Image 1 (tube, rainbow, N blue to C red):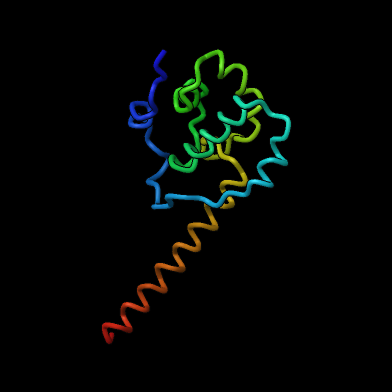
Image 2: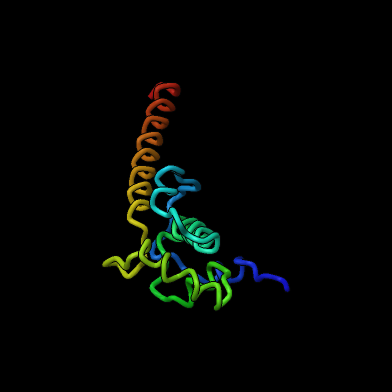
Length: 130
């Protein structure tokens, strides 16, 4: 049986706000393993897929069926894994489900990106003699 791809689903989802270019995030395997020890392979897989989707889409929607489609999980896989993974994506005041640790990393990445952009602009202006 062919598994559905995420492309058609992702194309229909509009992020809460335009995503700034943050194509990667820092990963801390020790922290991850300590917070998910004892999880099934299915639960780990769902969590990792949803972390990536949440990063790319600026959080997850507050619609379980839409999140399930994002993950490409079958209804049976979803029922089995979501009850454990859901707590990692609490609903936030903006109506999106967000992983708190990931949002700390997003803020840090945006800050670092802004600092580097500013430094690059200053360096470029100095080279151009402005």
